[in-house]
Amino acid sequence: MQLNTKHFGTVEIEESGIITFGEGLPGFEKSKKFVLLASGDESSPFKWLQSVDDPQLAFALVDPFVIKKDYEVNITDEVIQAVGIEKAEDVIIYSVVVVPENISQMSMNLRAPLVINLKNKKGIQVVLDSDRYSVRHYILEELHRQEVTVNACPNKEEGTVYCNK
Amino acid sequence: MLVLTRKKEQSIVINDNIEVTILDIQGDQVRIGINAPKSVSIYRKELVQEIREENKKAAEVKTVPLQDILKEGSINKEK
Image (cartoon, rainbow over the protein chains, first blue to last red):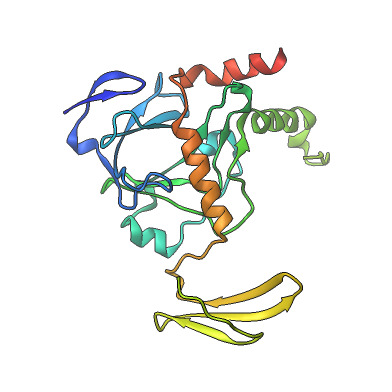
């Protein structure tokens, strides 16, 4: 079917690729059907979640584990049940990205990740119980932090040097 | 909205399987304990509001080439 999208003009999508968010997303409860669109090449951690119900609605997503390597998401039994997860390999996790006017302030929502079961094409935005992560985690700051950590530990392999993280 | 008045240590039962207890009252702060099945999600209202707001901001994102955005963002930062 054809979609007249906000960012990509008219796009041809497969019905089989449609992901259903049973409850929509907080703030967008009426939008339940989405498709994942690539952003540039396969190596990019970014994707677009394009609404099928509302062609003018699209969310920029990022693979949070690429940006924050130690990010942890605890998938509870409730989530497993909600999207019918059978195998861990069927699950993909994305964070919703906010890109403000000042692009350097772009952030990702680590507190409420999107959990998608690629096998049955069901998705849900999960609010993590722990307050360890923020709704607005600044991406460039995180990347810079990781760079600094790596550069501060040139002799990490030797195991005798402790570095400030 | 159903409005009830409770004293410290009194409770309210919802749906037969959710119990809300007033544990303590100190000045303008009330300590509330909730017993509910794990399947029932419970959050401070501000958090739910925050997530809705953040999603709304995310939906306003302009058409940007996401794959280049990390580089572009870095350049802006250095300016």
